Amino acid sequence: MSYTKLYKNSIDNPEKFWQEQAKNISWYKEPTVILSKDKNDYPQWFEDGELNICYLCIDKHIEDGFGEQIAIIYDSPVTNTKQKINFNQLQQEVSKLAGGLQSLGLQKGDTTIIYMPMIPQAIYAILACARIGVTHSVVFGGFAPKELSIRIDDCQPKAIITASNGIEINKIIPYKPYVDKAIQISSHQPQHVITFDRKQNVEIPKKDYDIDFEELCKKSKPAAPVAVKSTHPNYILYTSGTTGKPKGVIRDTGGHAVAMKFSIQNIYAVNPEDVFWAASDLGWAVGHSYTVYAPLINRSTTVLFEGKPIKTPDASTFWRIISEYKVKTMFTAPTAIRAIIKEDPQGKFIFKYDLSHYKFQFLAGERCDVTTLNWLEQKLNIPVIDHWWQTESGWPMLANMAGLELQEIKPGSAGLPVCGYDIQILNEEGEIAADDTEGLVAIKLPLPPGCLTDIWRNNARFKAGYFKKFPGYYFSGDGGYKDEDGYVFITGRVDDIINVAGHRLSTAEMEEIVASHPTVAECAVIGIHCDIKGQIPIGLIVLKSDVDTNHNLLEKEIIQRVRTDIGAVASFKKVLVVERLPKTRSGKILRKLLRNIADEINFNTPSTIDDPKIISEIQELYQQQQIGRFTKN
Ligand code: COA
Ligand code: AMP
Image (cartoon, rainbow, N blue to C red; front, top):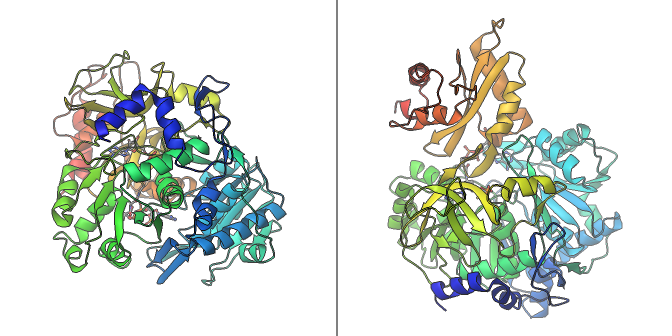
């Protein structure tokens, strides 16, 4: 069926459309109620269906006779390891760990936190939880103990599953001590910490709550999958919001499984047995959806990569993996490609490999600049597809549905609405904007299956954050416009969220940390353009009048605070001391202006500014400090 027809069906009759799609997965109890409302009047999918998503990822394929097929290819240039894991082996590993968790008293309704590097045991942990109905929350390893502790207090895990260490370029990241530190500063105390020892000579500090991952699995009986309701929270994934506190996006089970199966085939053009690689950390939504759940539900082979696009060992790694494992479709963030281009501008490494199996390159996570898209297209000579989604949606909202019918690619656009998403560009008054007119990107309810169903223990934030601005719509927080063919161009966030190397971060959260320094009277943290990372944060601070400190020292201290509280992933490396900040006449800091002065030559001066002379002061400072467009090459 053509894209246009299928898309129309999905919008005109969502219930019928998703009822059909739900038949593509196995249920213990097939749903009869397809679309209903929950207690908050929010649409929910497949209410009376029952299933187990780990069963769909593993056992179903073994029952169908595919136990010997490779499920996971683990490739770790940082440890020189390559490992292929078939569905039979995956079942053994996952069911034993699940049995181990049960022996510790974990059961349906409990939560766990998984804080692990990119190793197979992280996938075992995710699936083991899902197998016994335990809701997992994976926390990205680049977050510091304080961030981990915020998540511990919010989702109150009975157990934390971790590893001795991670490995970044040329350095060891000690995960277990970070977990200990996080527990020490948390109010909630998990009963168990299960640690996988990578045996890389990293000391594992011993605590009363410790359990050894391998010993637990060795002595446990394998656990069978437990049936859960479709609406059961499969996982919680914390993401940055516009306040200092991250929000726990809840993903259900049935809607999620249906969306995964639908999207991997119809968007990514991946069939059973194909090799698919989403080069994202498991701590992000991409890792959850397209490194773990979608490929495994689809009986495709997934690549688990522990490394970076560059320096592990060089800019050839992506192409080596694609060639070696005959990857059909790959998904990464534009920042990774920009990093590769910087190291290998001619793309010489690409031509060293046989990439004849490689059919589609997908990019997302941040705006994709046309130069990067064109470079890739030219070097790879396959469709390079920018697509748009969020942690909240869990799967693409805008894309080129290559598996269904490849459409024209318009560089700069994240594509056309995906089946199930009625995407509209609204003005501030909630009216539909004319073609080519920039507005706010919103999606008419109901959202399709697989999207967030709530915010963990904070329904008020869920309603206020997404549905209050435009009743009847989900508000994405992004700005954009549609052209006359319906292609949507995402122009960026309209709130305090920034995207640093494809990682979503809150400047409000950074600002709270900077403001807590005793010398700071007031401050602003903004995201400015970065050629490689897309955006990077910088801080501007006004000192209290009696402060007479060395500015370099102060800058180091503040940077360290952000690193200690949020983590290295924030890439917060620059603080500028200013006499005053630009403000409106009513006293609001003009953060957007600060950003625009750094990024744009022709920016608009807000009519509400209290003193326009400050613009030249800021320009001069940026020039001196080589910030943004004032950087000398
Ligand atoms: N555990 C611990 N620390 C981590 C980490 C992890 N999982 N991931 C990143 N960090 C640390 C890094 O070591 C670095 O620390 P440093 O400041 O001490 O050097 C810091 O966080 C920033 O890391 P990163 O943003 O990865 O920058 P980088 O300079 O090391 O690498 C890129 C730059 C572009 C190569 C890298 O960011 C990249 O591969 N990005 C793609 C991201 C992606 O795929 N996102 C997809 C989400 S959809
Ligand atoms: P995350 O929740 O981490 O996936 O980040 C979601 C945000 O990343 C979106 O709200 C966008 O601001 C941005 N984003 C993701 N994909 C794209 C894209 N293809 N083009 C522009 N922005 C994107």
